[in-house]
Image (cartoon, rainbow, N blue to C red):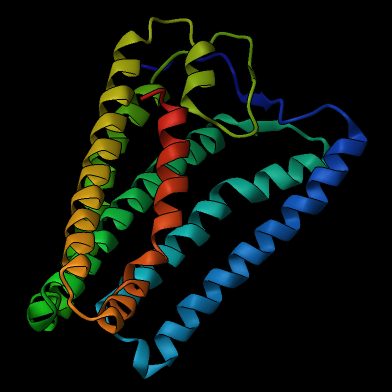
Length: 259
């Protein structure tokens, strides 16, 4: 299939046309962006330097932090640049690259959440076999599997979007290159691509959510069976830190895809 697009760039509208509001947004989002990057770099650095943080949990956390850094870099620098300069154009290759990185990294984040939930399940429910089962080789294979599955689920629909002809207008009503506004700009029927995206999103979200819920259910059941109060208090912090992340991620994703 040949892309017969007559466009050379898209115009991303952003969040506002007000210069004053854009300046305020730039200042706030720049601080959040820098704190996110520095915080995740700190997590990665500490987990590499401190010999006490070499367990599988911190290995997965380190990879998750790297994903968050890459995910932020895929969206925020271009958005901040447009807020500061009011230059809202982006080339077609740049837009498609941002689209691919957004979905690839975002999908990998969800797989990592499911993987970290499974890791906490193994640590709390099978502590005696945890070190044997979750060895370095298994952890590496799990992370590699996350990347491979993310690529296989995200690349086909993204590639189909790239092949679409875009005949105008070239205005994207969003602050980054997303599939929904891009599909609206195509002069060809996009129903099959929308189905592909919906199927991929359903597999990713429901699959990782199922793993997370089952893992948490087993963890809670195991903790409740611990006879001593001290034992329950010791086990609870091992998975409590992941719960806010799970709630925020899945609520946002289900709202985004209306699932």
